[in-house]
Image 1 (tube, rainbow, N blue to C red):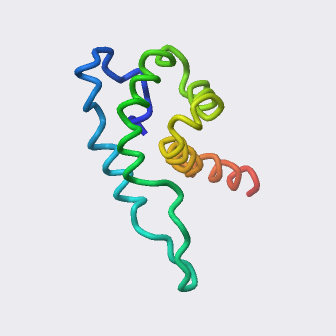
Image 2: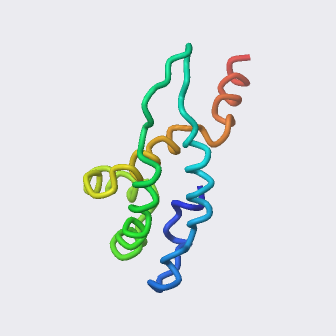
Length: 114
């Protein structure tokens, strides 16, 4: 998830321009496969090509306006204020952030239960 940690981003425009592009491509490759369930293909959650187009502008907005804020605040501000500007990147972020990063909380709950 380092791709979304704006505190690690470059402040210089030229350096930021191609920063984390490879990580974005890794995420997009993972989600570009069609969703097929019970032989029914569902529509894509976001447009991969438009994600690529939105990425540079997204980095500039976050870097210039939001980089000093905590990631939780950044995410809520992005979803609230920039959903129309970067709809595909926002959908990707929402999708990625709904996936658990670890099972620690679940395992602790089971340990307490036992």
